[in-house]
Image (cartoon, one colour):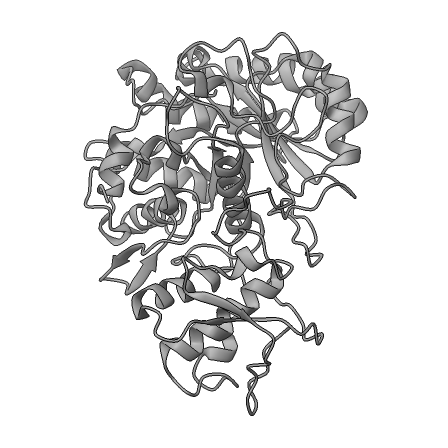
Length: 474
C-alpha cells in the first residue's frame, strides 16, 4: 500500500468549490451536501430547497457563492437547513487591509447576507475562499487569509449575526509528506507555525471548525481500493497508538487531528467541507461506479454523523458535506468531475444512502450476482429473534483473515460481548470471537448468504451456536 500521507500531499486539488438506514430500521442520519450548479439540467433552487427540507434527512447545505436566488430559496422553503456560504478567493485581500478591511467586510456582509438572514436563511458558516494553502499557492492570498477571516468574524458580530462562524476549506496537502502512519502526521513546514497555529488559535477563540476537503478518491489505487471505500481489508497499523486503520478516511481525519494536537490545538473541531466518490470516470478505471460511491459515502456518513468517530476521536461527530448533491454536466476536466452527484435532477437517488424520508432503505437490493463482500450499513445492535439461521467462521479458516473480519465488523456492530468480561469472551480465541461478530454482522444485514461470505471464511448454519451466557442473535 502506498504511504497514505505521501499520497495526500501529492493528490491533485479537488476544488469543487445519515449513514444510511439499515435493513433493521436504524434511523437515517443527518448529513450536509455540497450544492453546485455548474449544469444545464438541474431543478430550480426553490425545488431543491423544498425537496431537501421535506423529503430528505439533509440538514446542511454548502453553497459555492452568495447567489441571492439560492439564499432566497432556502429562506422561503427550508429555513431549518443550515447554510454555508462561500466567498471568492479574490475578495480576501480587500478584507485583510488594516485600514479599510473591516469596513469592506461589513459591507460584504450587509450586501450579501444580512437581508437574506433576516428573511429566514439559516446561514451558520461563512467560508473565506477555498484551498488558499494549496495545491496552487498565491502568496498574497496566503498572507491575506487569516486577517480576512478575523475581519469577517468582527463584521458578523457588528452586523448582529453572531451565529455565523468563519472558516476556510483546506486540501489535505496542508499535511507534510509522511509514511502513512497517522501518529507521524504534521503540518507542512512553513505553514505549521506561521499560518496554521494562529489560524487554529482563531478557531479555538471563535468556536469555528478547521475545515478540510477529505478525498480518499484522489489517493486510491487498485491495490488499496478496499481501504479507501470502507470495505474489508488488512489496514495500516500505527505502532505508536497501537491502532489498526481499516479506512483511509479515518486515517486522514486522525492525521489532521494529530497535526493539530502537535501544535497544541487538539480540541478544535474538524469539519469536512467536501468528501465524495464518483459514479463514473475514465474508461477502464478500476474502483468507480455506483456501488463504490455508495460504499464510500455510507462509510463516511457513519463515521461523521453516526457517532462512531475515528480511532483517535471515538464517539465524535463531524460537520460534514458530501460532494455532491447533483452531477454537474458543465464542469471541465476529467469525467469524474462531472459525476459526483448522489441525486439525479428528478430527485431520484443515483444509489441508496438512506437519505430519503420514508424512502428506499439504505441496504441495497441484492443484484442478480451479488458481491461477496458484506453490506456496509448494518444495524449496530440486532436483537435475538429466533430466526433459525446463523453465520459462523469456517473451521480451519485463516486466523489473520478472521481477525480482519473482526476489525471490520466491529465498526458496525456491538462487540462488547467478545471483550474481556463479556458473555462471549471465552473461549478467548479468534475463531470463537470471529464467529460471534460475523453472525451479528450477518443478522444486521438481513441474513443474506452473501453477507456471510467474508472472503470465503464464513458459512451459514441452522444450528444455534449459542453457548452458556453467550447468546448469538438471529
